[in-house]
Length: 444
Image (cartoon, rainbow, N blue to C red):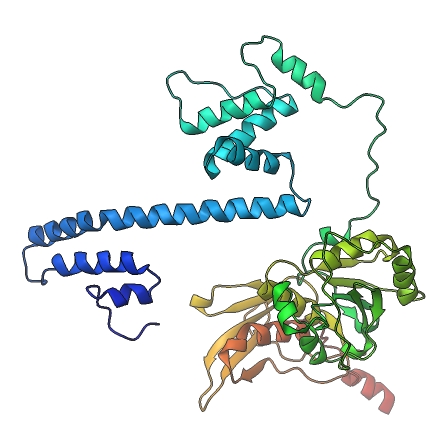
């Protein structure tokens, strides 16, 4: 929250809020010439003053809107060029760039041009032309349709193009993959069953393992995940494999320093068949219930090329998108690990609204935020469906689970509630003590 006073008549105020210096000066000048009238002033006069200031601000608002639109088009074109440069773009992307290069279209008209070109190229019917409603977008579509080989004046044009676009009947069918590639695996969630650390497999890219250095890791938009793994109890039993430009390697000691590795680009991947042999040797003789892939870009592509060496198991996931999301996905996956002798409740936790008092539900249990503890801390109470505290539950080791717990930092409230719900989900009311009637029979 900004604590300093807001002075709209000062250009520095607008510059501090992200406006360009020339725009900031126009904004400040309009506020100096047409300041707000005091509250006791006539309502009509105050509204007239606001309209005058709005008219004075119209040029800068239009300039800001135009600059924002230009930035949007530059970003879109740059993204499309990058996709085509990496070989990931399709025919539409190439048509968009061709519309800009050949006809000088902006982004919106280039997209319409690509739609028309692709419709003609794929053998589709063209869009219905509405007489008297020609717009720059519709004209760009017509140009693209014409450049793609379409001809509205030809009665048999659509049939001819559809016949040319159809694949030959004697072409062999394209074989489908028998298993999804790691790049198509879903993101981690809390729905799958927890798994023992000895039956879990983690595959890291070199940036995620910290083998590229801090600067290179930032350039690849990859999250450094080993520190969070070190702090997780039981992770020493986990099988960890690292992907580098030299293939696949085991990460025996999580905390041991490793030599730096060169970044792996996705254009020239080292397709060495020995990499698949390396991967099979690292996981030979082991059974897994849970696999997580934390790799991006070229490292993920290299794993896709040797995905046949990976075993099929119950849960197969991968981290993705931004660094923040990758870390969040990794924490979710770590929370599903089971230490020897531990039992946790599985399933998706359904969260209630925090404004009404945060609640979380898992199975028959409900964790509720009960407010501040006198003297410091925040209370969490686990209840049964009848609204009473969940008393009488013990862990598999026989340790009693209190229905109420206190945490010091409210920022960790959701995480602490999830831990309590998982603990009660794996608890039982059966104890090692015999029933009273059995004691009586033994005494008799």
